[in-house]
Amino acid sequence: MPVLQIALDLMQLNRAVVIAHEAVDGGADWVEVGTPLIKSEGAEAVRTLRREFPGKKIIADTKTMDVGGVEVEIMAKAGANIVTVLGLSEDSTIEEAVMAGRKYGAEVMVDMINVPDKISRSKEVEKLGASYVCLHMGIDTQMKGEEPPIDILKKVVETVSIPVAVAGGITAENAGLYAEAGATDIIVGGAIIKTGDIRAAAENVKKSIAGAKIDTNLAKKYSEENLFEAFSRVSTCNISDAYHKQGVVYGIPPQSLQHKQRMVGRALTVQTANGDWAKPVEAIDQVKEGDILVVDVGGAPVAVWGELATCSAIVMGAKGIVIDGAIRDIDDIREMGFPAFAKSVAPCAGEPKGYGGIGIEIKIGGQKVRTGDWIVGDESGLIVVPKEIAVEVANRALDVHERENRTREEIKRGSTLSKVNELSKWEPVQ
Image (cartoon, rainbow, N blue to C red; front, side, top):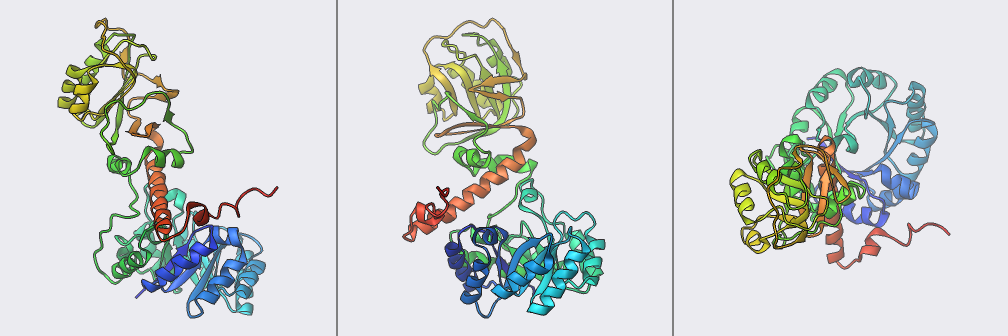
C-alpha cells in the first residue's frame, strides 16, 4: 500500500512537532519538513524532526533549483532521508544532488511543479539518478479550483520504474483515487494539518488510501459551479484576510440581518437618484435565483426600497439588497428574514421617476461593482469579489478559515494566540 507523507507546511517548529506526532499516531508513515518550515527554521527543523522520529523517513522539501550538491549535503547531514529538487532545474543540478545524496546517504525526489511536459521530464530525471518523481500541484494553482490530474499520474507511472509521489490538493475524499492510479507516496498537507483533530484526519486519509470511501467535507477546492456553497462557509473577515483587505465596502451596515445570518450571491446592479425607486423596482423583474440587488443612490437620504419591493424580490429569488442610500420598512423586512444593507433608514420614500440604469457598473462604499460580481455580507460588513477571481478568493478564504480552526483548537488546549503564532519571535529586529 502507498505510504502517507505528512507535509508540515508551517512557520513554527514547535507547532510542527506537535502536529507531526498526532499525524504519526494517526498513521502517517513519512514526515516532511515543508518548504515554509525550512525557510523559517532552517536545517534545525530537520534535525529536530529527526530526533523526534528516529524510525521515520524525513523528507526535506527544499525545492532546490541550484547548487544541488550543497543543499543535499546540508539536509542529509541534518538527518534528511530524502531531499527535493525541482524538475525545472538544470540537469547538472540534479546530477550534483544525486551524487551528494549517494555520498551522504540521502535520496533525491524530483518535484515536477510547473514542468510543462511531466512525462518526458520524468524519464530524463530517472536517467539522471533520481530516486522518486513527485507530481505536485502548487497551492496557488489549487486555489483556482484545480486538482492533480490523474491521467498524467497514470502515464508517468507507466513510463518510469522509480516510485511516483503525488502532492497538492490531496484529501481523504480523493487520496484513494491517486493510490489506485499508481502513486506510491501520497503527500498530504492542509487536509491534515489544518484540522482540529490531526490524528483522525490522518486516519481518514489512510483509510482512503486503503480503498475506503471517505466524505469529510474538509479541504475541498471549489470551482465556478459551487461558489455559493464556498462563500457561504466563510465570513467576510476570512475573505478580507484572503483578499488582502481588498473589496471591503465601507459605510453600508447591515440593517436586517439575524445573528449569524450571511448574505451570499451575485450582484445585479442598479443606479438611481435620491428617492427615485423606479429602477430598483424594475430590476426585480430581471432577478435570477440567487441574485443580490446592489443599488447606487450616492448615499442620498430618501428611501428607494421598502416592504413591498422586498416581497416582490423574495418571490423572484433574490438573496438580499445592498443600498448606498436609504431604506424603509426595515422592521417588516427584518421579520421576513431578508438580508438588507443600507447606508441609512428613513420613513420617507420618493417618486418613481425612472432615472438611472440596470446592469451598469456602479460604485458603492468605495468599491466598484459590476453585475455578476460576488457579494458577501454578514454582521461584520460587506465585501465585493470580482467575478474573474471569485474561485481563487473563495478557496483562499476557506484556507484562512481552516487555519483559524486549527489555531482555535490549540488555544483551547491551553495556548494563547500570541504563543501559537510566536509573535515576539517574528517581530522586526530593531
